[in-house]
Image 1: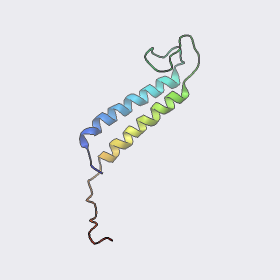
Image 2: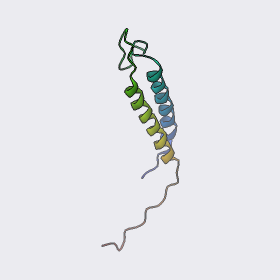
Image 3: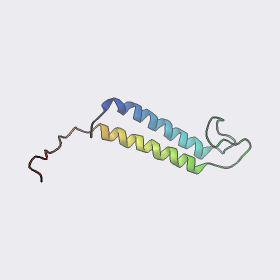
Image 4: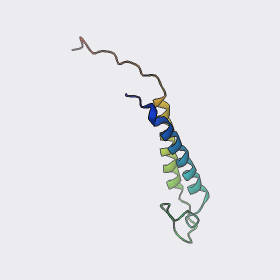
Length: 83
């Protein structure tokens, strides 16, 4: 896998933003969400738990991606002589 260290910082920043968005989905009901959030419904008391779960999952995925980009680049074994 090709390492791209220039993507570490953006991935971490995006992960933090997505975890904050997940917290907003879990804390506020649909009527209290900002109007540009998917799931905003004026006057609704419904909590969009699955929206928050999706945002948290993608946020954690960004952290995992950044973590894998910090590892050493190991050379691949050559396949010479392989049938």
